[in-house]
Image 1 (tube, rainbow, N blue to C red):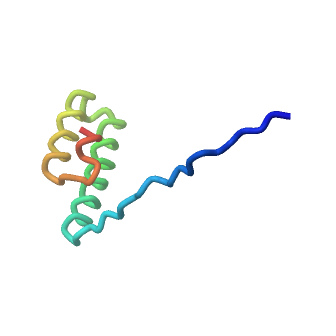
Image 2: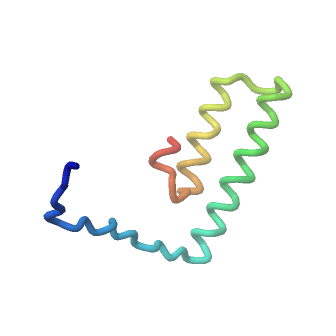
Length: 72
């Protein structure tokens, strides 16, 4: 039988809540709507993938979603 000695207890990571202002929530909502509309245009063949990427980059800049840096 093998015995393992535990020497230190790892504490769970601290997760900090992010409180959104009403304006930030509105921007998030508007960004999601713009993304859905733009994807719809792409799926219908009304815009190219390059145009889609340009529009989404502009949407990210304009609406500044919380995850904008990751999404861009």
